[in-house]
Structure formats: C-alpha cells, structure tokens
Image 1 (cartoon, rainbow, N blue to C red):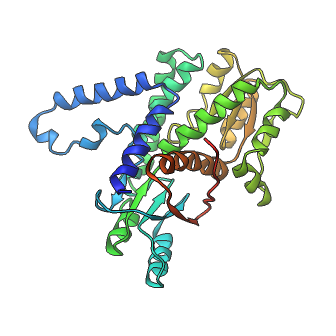
Image 2 (spheres, rainbow, N blue to C red):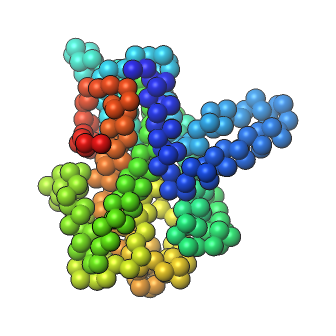
Length: 320
C-alpha cells in the first residue's frame, strides 16, 4: 500500500469514530473552509491547507513521499530521535523498514496539536454539559497548552527523520478516537453495575492484560470494587487532559464514573470533591488499544503489513 492510502484511511476512520459525531466534525471542517476563504491572499499562503480536509493536526506525515510503497512498518507509542536511529541501524543491518508510525505527535504535528483540544467542548456537550460552559472552560486550556508548546524545539524529531532519510508519520487523535468510542460503546452495551465489572471487562482486553504483566493494570483510583457506576463517561481523546473545573459540571450533568487514561493530582482532588468515581485504564495500554483498532481497519482495507513493535507498542489483532 502507499503512504497516502495509510494517511487517508487514518483520517477517514478517525472521523468516523470521533466522539463528537461525524456531523459535528464536518461542520468544523466547513467553518475552517469559511475562515480560509475570508483570509487575505498573503495570509492564505501560510494557511495549513491539509487542515481543510484533515481535522486532526496531530496526525500527519512528517517525512516521506505520499506515493511511497509501504510493506514493513515500525510502530511505537513514542518515536523520537533514538527510535529513528534504532530504525536506521536496523535498516543498515539489512532489515527492511518502509515507515515509522508514532502515536504521540512530533514536529509539526506537535506544534499544532493544541488545535485538537477544542473538540473536548463538543464531547462534554454530548455528556450533558451545556456547550457555552464547555467552550468557556476548554478555551483557556487550549491557550495554556499552546503557550507550553511555543518555546520548545519542536523540529528535532522530524529533522532527524529527514537527515537519516526515514519515513515518519504520527497517528494521535485518529487512534485516541478509536479507543474512546470502542470502550464507550462496549461499556454502555454491558451496562455494568459496579466498578469491578468495568475492571473485569478491561482486563479481558489484550492491551490491558499485557500492561498488567508490567505492573500497570487498570485501577480504581476513586471509589471501590462495589461502588455503583452510575452514568459512565469514557474520557480518552481530545489531545490532552481537560480543565479540572469540568468535574463539577460533569457531576451536575449526572456523570457517576469516568474511565480515563490518566489524571493529574489536581484532577483527582476535583473529581473526589464532586463525588465522581474514577477508573484509570492506563495510558500506554490505552494508546495501544487505539492504535491496534486503527491498524486492524488499515489491514482489512489495504492488505497485510509486516510490523516491528517498538517503544511500548504491541500488535494485537481482533476479529472484526
């Protein structure tokens, strides 16, 4: 398959699994096109044209021609300069590697990923939080993350890929959307009564089962085995952790339990303050789940790939 086919499928399937719903995603792209059309010609020259069709700034091709044929891929949760050097060493030793796929964004995909965070407003709205409140709480978080990105040297990894002539792409929100929608759908279907029922379900997933072997199983952070779940919110996508102030609004909207990847100490205090149960499924394990669901679709549509597992990624297959 070609590199362009991989990127196109990642974006298409990421949109299908977006917790906001496909209609909301398409409306966001329409607004972006309207904003572009309203720009002066000099500003259009600097506009990110790919963003008119790809709503996920953090999921991009960082190095490589779109017509490149891909058969063997190295996939890692984090692909930075050491992993690129590792890939080049393997290539020099005779191992064929056509493409590196990173989950976490690097390069341009990292410089711009704060733009993805705004999707949290619509996700919260679907959970019962009024959209005006969601927007007003999420917007400062977008600016905060943007400020934290601005002083960093964001071209290091993409520079390394170019200098070593290694093809590199990132698949962040396109994968996170999959884990969020998959877990929400499966948990809603099973209608768990107790937190221990959710833990049991997570432990049946190979990604979480594997992570438990390395002392990182899913855990109940707030609540107990026999705590009643109430309404469950799987919070797994949207770039990064949202504003801590949102826990009060989620509690008011009737959310009883949050299933997430990770939570800051300040977030834990706020969730506890507002009597919300919290299950931490695990960060890297959840990233693996999202990537595997996405790669299952890729192989189903475009044929089998040879995988090299690296940087915390493990390939697990599901029967679709």
